[in-house]
Image 1: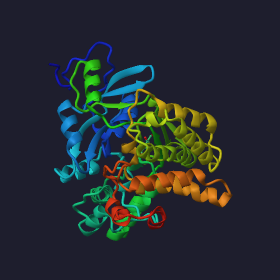
Image 2: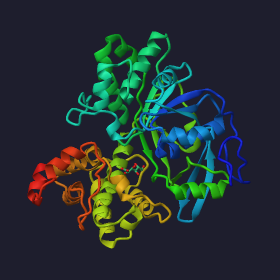
Image 3: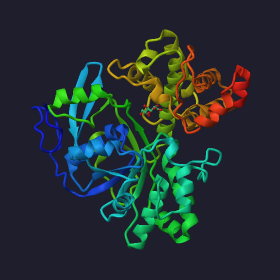
Length: 445
Ligand code: CS2
C-alpha cells in the first residue's frame, strides 16, 4: 500500500512539489477552502512562493464541514492538482496551504488567525449564498441565517461577514492595521459587494470601526476562472497512481486558468503574476464578460442538459441541438458587453465552447444547477434586462430561464424526484408543488 501524501511521503520521480520554506508565517487566511480555491488561488500562491518567496502561506478556514480539514491536515496541507486536458493528465503537488481550521469546532482559533499580525489578506470563496446579500437592495440581508445570528451575537460569529467584522474590531483594539479582503466568488463587482456588507454590518456595531475599515481595509474586485468539477474516487486513484502517494485531498481541473485582479492591496500581496495573474485598474469589463458568457451559458446548458438527461457538460456539448442553443446564447450575451480590453469576444466564445467540450473533464450539470436563485440574476436576468432596453432579442434568456423553471419542478420526465439544492428550495417547492399549469408556474416563479 502507498503511504499517505505528507511532507514525508516519497513522490515518484518527476512530480513537481513545493521546494520553498513551508514553515513561514501565513500572510493569507482563506475562508471556504473548497476544490475551486485549491485549483485556483492556492495554485497561484504556490507559484508565487516558488518564484518570489515571502510570508504568504495560506491558513484555510471552513465555515461548516470538517471534510476538507480532515483530508488536508493529516497530509501537512499538501494535495495533488490533476490537470486534465484532451491530450492527457498531469499531476503536481501544491504546498501553499499550511493547515485548515474548522470554524464550528474552533471559532477562537479562526478569529486569532484573522487577527494575527502576520495576516495581510483575507480571501473568500464561500459561493453566492454565503454572503447574505439582499437581492433587492444589494445590501445586507438581515434575514440571512448567519447575518441574523451574527448581528445578535457579534463576538461569536458564524458567517463570513460576521467573522470579518469581529476580526477587524480585534485588530483595531490591538493596534494592528487592517487587511485586504479579496472576494473570489462569481458576483459582479464582488469587492464592492463585500465592502458594502462589511460596512453595513460594522455600522451596527461602532461608527469608529467603520472609519478604521474605510482607512485600513481594501476590497479589490476580481474575476476568477477555472472549471473545477467536484473530486471523485477517480481523482484520488489517479493522483495516487501519478504521485505514488495516497491523497484524499486531490483536486482535478482543466488546463485553462485566469485571474484578473484590481491592484489595491493595503498590506502587500504575493507575486501572483508568477502564476499568470493579471492586475488591472478596473475588473468590471472582464467580470461581466465571464459572468455572462461563461457562467450564463453554463447555467443554460446545466438546466437544459440536466432535464434532457445529460449528466455532464461534455455530453451537452455533444448534443447537436443544445450546442446550437449554447452558441446562440454566447452570441446574444456578447451583444450586451462593451469592448473588453485585449479580448476578442468571438475567440473567447470559441475557446469557451472548447473548454466545455473537454472530454477529459466530467463536470456534472447537477453541480452547476445548484443555487439557481443565487446565480440567475447576474448571469441571465441582468443581461436580459439590458437586452430588453437595447431592443436586442430575448429568446435565449427566455429559453434559459424556462429551463431553470422546468428544473425547479424537482422531478424528471419519468417522475423520479431530485433535490434542487438551492437555499430557496422549500419556498419554490411550496409554490410549484401541485399540478400547476406551465402558465401558473411561470407566474408564481
Ligand atoms: C459554474 C462555475 O458551478 C457553476 O455555477 O458556472 O463554478 C464555473 O465552473 C466557474 O465559474 C468557472 O470559472
